[in-house]
Image 1 (cartoon, rainbow over the protein chains, first blue to last red):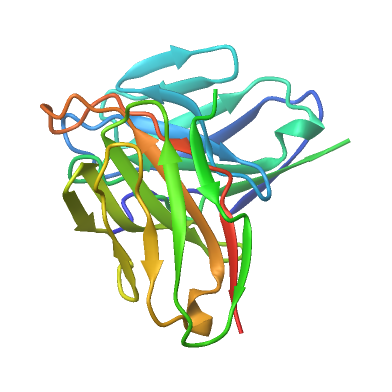
Image 2 (cartoon, one colour):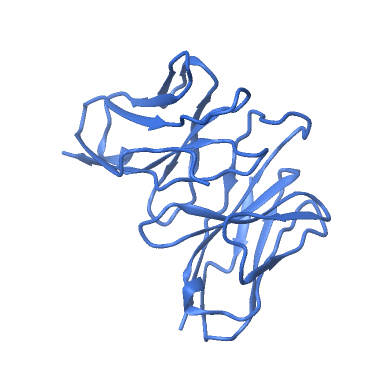
Length: 109
Length: 118
């Protein structure tokens, strides 16, 4: 039932911009793309959501190309506190939120 | 603001014992979910509910039962605990208008219950 594919892990350094790409080839016309962040021993936390083009909030940006078969989460100038697992979700069958394995981001000093 | 509250935070069970994981939300959300997360893995959907009296299976429902008698509460029941059910359990909720196939939904998670079955 997994509908998304992400890199298993990524490394970065403080102050760098991090881009995490998610593939969702079978996205349906009306599906939204949502990204969550999870710190150890905590539940996931909503980061950003979009349908097409570009969405920006105070935490991140989300880039979605015209064909919507992929999306890229962009974290500007990461810090050590951004070390977490990032999940890309596409709604499947009306309100069944299926999480993949996520991308473990490790930010180094 | 309480949000989604889960109890207990930790529990150790013996094989064959039963228990109920409690979940309550105070945001008047109509959708509620139970996930389990094994070490180093992503979350897997166990059961979900679209409103009081309505529940449905997710990816991994075997060995679990749920009920939804009120909008606020969504308990998860383990009848015969097995070592394979050792995991962290997360409850979540979301608000939905319930009219569109895919809506602009956000999940709100509780802090989790760490369960060990020995």
